[in-house]
Each structure stands twice: as C-alpha cells, then as structure tokens.
Image 1 (cartoon, one colour):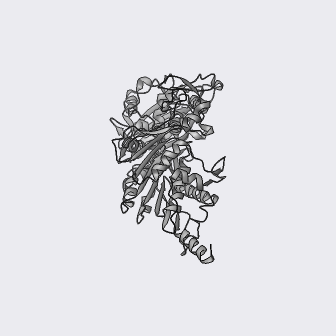
Image 2 (tube, rainbow, N blue to C red):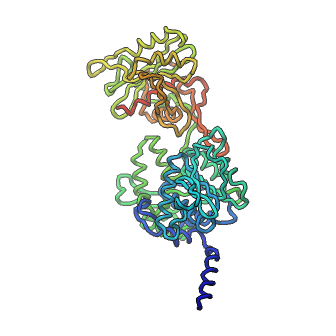
Image 3 (cartoon, one colour):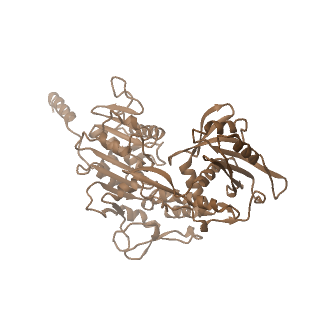
Amino acid sequence: MGTIEKLRHDALQVLRPPPSMPLAEWCEANIQIPQTASATPGRMRLWKFQEGIANAMTDPAVNEIVIQKSARVGFSQLLMGYIAHTVATNPCPILVTQPTQDDSRAFSVDTEALFEASPALRGLISDGADESGRSTMMRRLFGGGSLEFLSASSPRSFRRKLGKVVIADEIAAYEMTQEGSVLDLLRMRSQTYRDRTLVFGGTPIFKGDAVCALYEDSDQRVFEPKCVECDDYAQIEWKDLHFKKDELEKGVEWCCPNCGCLVPESRKAEMVSNGRWRATNPENKKRVGFKINSLVSPHYNARWSQIVAEFLACGKDPAALQAWTNLLLGDGFEQTGEGVDESALTLVSASLDQIPDSGLFLTGGCDVQSDRVELSTVAWDAEGRGTVLAHELVYGDPLENDVWVALADMIARRFPHPRGGTISYDKVLVDAGDGVRAAAIQGFCRGRAPQTFPSKGVGGWKQPAVTLGKAADKTVRLQLLGVDGLKDRVHRMATAGTLRFSDSLPPTYWEQLAGEEIRVRYSRASQSANGIRSLAGEVKDSTARLWHWLPSI
C-alpha cells in the first residue's frame, strides 16, 4: 500500500463508527476494574445475570428500566460500564443521580477511576475535556455530550439540565421534595429525546417503596439458574435453602422446586452461568423490570453459608432483620402499619420507686401541649434495653410559670436504686417544636445544661437520629431529632421486648401508645412518611426523645 493510499485508509478509519456490539461484550473488551474498586482488579468480567441487565440498557426497543436488587451483585460497576459505553460509542448528555451530594461525589470519583484504569477510556472525561475549562468533578464535558452527577436531595440542581440517558441509583432513599417527585423531575429532563433511556434502580427499604412499586409496574423479570439435576429453570429463593443452624460448616443446599433434588453450593456457579431471565408479567409494556438478590451472586461474601450465618446473627432484632432482608434478599421490609399491640408488650414490675436492678441511668422526654406537659421516664441498662417507668402529666398553660416550676421539681428528683444510693435524670429533652411556646421552653432549659435541652422533631426517614441546631445562646442548643426513624425504632423495640413497660402505667398511656401508627406512603414512586394519629401520639413522641441519649451509655 502506497503512502497516499495509507493516509486515505487511516483517514477513513477515523470516520468509521465504532463496531456495534452488546453492552456486556463491550464492557468485557474495554473496561479494566481499578484496584480501588475491587479485591480482584483487572479486566471486567460479567456474571450471567449482569449480562441480561446490561444488554437491556442498550436495547433500542427499551426506554425505561428498573432494577430491584440486593447488595453484592455488582450493580454499581454495571452502571459505570453503561456510562463508559455511552461516552465512548454514543456520546450524549448523561444525568446520574444519587440520594445525597456525598453519594454523588463518591460515585463521580469511582467513575473517573474506572475511566483512568481502562486504556480504551483514559482521558475521555478528564478535567481538561472542555477547552473553556468548565469541567468539574460533578460535571464533565466531552465531545458530543456531558456527564453530570446530581443529588436527589437538591432538586433545584435539575433545572436547565437535559439528559438523553438518565440514571437514578438507590431510588428508595429519595424523599418527596418541595418541587415534587424526583423521578418525575428526571423524566421531564429527558422528554426532549425520543430515544431516551431511563435507568432506575436500587436496594429496597420497605415493601411498596419507590423501587418495589416500579418493579411491580413492569414486566417483572426474574433470574432463573438452571438446575444441574433436572435441567429445568427456577429461582433460588430463601425458602428453598436447607441447612442446620448448628452445622453450617457442613454446608447449605438448595432444594430445586421442580425436581426436589438438593444441590450443594459447589454447583451454584455452574447453575448461574447457565441461567436465564424470564418475564413473569410480559403484558406490561411500560418498562423492563429486573429483580436480583445475593443468593445467585458468585461473590465470595454472597456464599449461601455466609448469608445464613448473617441471618442467624440477626436474632429477633427487627432493625438487623430489615437490613438483612434489604441488602441480601433485595426485598422491601414488611411494615404492618399497625399501632403497638399492648398484648405483645413486655410488662414488668417497675416504677420510679422500684428502679430495675440493671438500670444505669434515667432519661426523660417531655411533650408540650397547649394545656399540659407530659413527662416519660425510662431506665436504660448496659445493653441498651429500656424500661418505661412512668408517664406523668402536669396540667396548666405552658405560657405560665407554674407548669415549669412543677416540671423543674420533677426532674430534680432522686430515686432509690436497688444496688444502693440514689439515681437521678441523666438527660431530659423538652419538645420545642411549637413556635408559640418555644421562648418559654428555651427559658426553662437555659441554665439547666448539660442535663436539659430543647428539642424539635424533623420529618424524613433519611434524617439522622440527632443533629445540633443553632444555639440560642451559650447554654441552650436545640436538638433536631429524626422523629420518623426514632418512632419506628421505639415501635420495633417495644414489639421485640427490648423496650419494657411498667405494669403500673396509667390506662391513657396504652391508649396513646397504640394510637399512632407508623406508615410509609408513596406518591408517584416517591416516599413520604408520617404518623397516623387515631388518638394521640404524645406518648410515642416523648418516648422517641429518650432514644437520642442512648449512645451515651
């Protein structure tokens, strides 16, 4: 070939579009996993169930995908592979959303590391990709498109954004915003493109949450490994695992629902590699839905014996069982939506004059109403178990001084301890959520720190148990409490027996405790949570305040 012919050939090769291949095949040919992202860095290798999800992302007949998944299934790397493929072969505006700003920043760093570790991708989204210097960590510009990392907690950042490819990760953690559903806002950001692709996914939290609701309204694909005994296909479900809890070292087996044979875990990888995706609701054409859990993952920490051991370690702890259900089974946790059943509670002979022998300190939670103040007192032991000793009412107008004088006398009391000596209140929180009485409450708390502080409830399941608000002065610091999570914790402790109750509590206490149901509600696949009061929720309000001080054990 002469020089001119070679130049012409090379020039035409530059103009030739990249070869068309399925996303799964492209990822394995072009992506290198960096050392910071995996214990086994190197060339990307996809498991069989990942291949099906990946290829649906680039299927021109698919516009919207939802993935309900557990942990330990390689979902984050799959998303980064799809981003890399889009940047390299079909550049366009890409929007990637995570629940918080910190999550988005971390995902941005991980994505850049994957690009830099892969020779075929290196430099495509570098900081110098834009001649004007406008590329940043959260917004990368490249030839033909852009890559922007957004936070679902800041919906205003969606304004003036467009995305042909929109990715929303961990959508069960997205909360309803003042501007509406985050997922609806993202859909609107892509309406300009007829051939848009929306990828919504994440680990569920509660049954019926955002990711569960979208999956239910899809073609509901499930992954079915191929049984090595009967050559038929079936899901691997928790109910079909066979084990003896005292002999886990002997292994865990799966019972095939088709043939009844017990298959050892040593055949798991073989079954998964020959598995398939099957749509169980094919008549639904709205979106493609995938559901996957750790039971089919070849990941070392997704061994059946490991998953069983983690289940057994949960015991009867509802919080631990929820985490296990969410992260390993990829299912939403079942919420009863019922108030506390008094018959299911643990009653003990205890009171302010009969402190439990294991009680180390007392905490008080005050709920302030228009005509009274309610004080709940709980004794805590070294293991974090609590005993509600009393629920006392002081009637009167909180805007008048008499109520606060009486409350001051109550929290100054000392009580005999069965091991000798006396015990007093370690911490007391007073509800200051009502702006009308906030000044009176802060005046009461002023000078009583570090024992007594004002508090205010903040709604939202993603709120931390406590954060510090602005200080009114050097002695008064408002405590902001994530009441939805705290009330849920009180409810679970009560039903699990780790929060016990005095058998001498007044009848009105039980009416109020059972009167507030904890429910999670969703509007257009976005979460909002609240308490539904059938009587009064002051008991659970004041008891929830006590939980804040538990970490001080």
